[in-house]
Length: 249
Ligand code: AMP
Image (cartoon, rainbow, N blue to C red; front, side, top):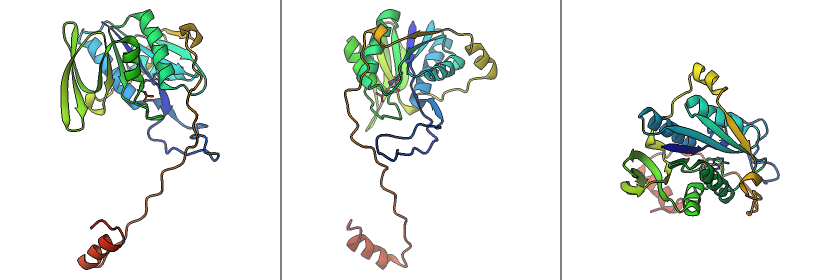
């Protein structure tokens, strides 16, 4: 079983994001970038499938600028076998990503694609679902457990009310939720080994996709600052504030 894992280079989750002065987006200059955390979980899951003898090859794919190669190398250092880098500068929206991934799926014929449930930069939560629709494949989103069967997968999904278990036919698209696993850190020897693993490069045009954005960002603003709390002297003051200021009782 071949597993394809799309990995996106995003602002590191520890970075405090700053909005650009002209409100056109967020500041990316001199900001630490890393693999999208949900994609690390996807890579980890694919590698565990390989270690369990259920997957034969794990391919990491990234669509992005030259530096997206570092994100692919991280996946290779974790244990992926090879990489595919679709070189593209500038923003790329989920539909274009899904179309490019469709082209790669048609070329590579994987049995399973594991994506993150969402990229923490655009918070779109769309790519996996769009890819599944474009391919006509089954989808199991927000997975917290994946069991590989004979021609099918049993996936436990994190839904509002608890956990839902579904069975889907292979080939399938699965998107990862936070509790699926805890991704490993790459060891130094594996980081060295990853330098020798192959990364194939291609362009969106090679896949017949026009990556031009279809959405226009009108503006990006910081969330409102949280107001500080106040101390109340007694219960009577608390009730009065809740009634008259917060107007919640
Ligand atoms: P999104 O729909 O943008 O929230 O992204 C969901 C998932 O799609 C991510 O967690 C990645 O697995 C995949 N993905 C999105 N954009 C890219 C990209 N540029 N390169 C590789 N994978 C991507």
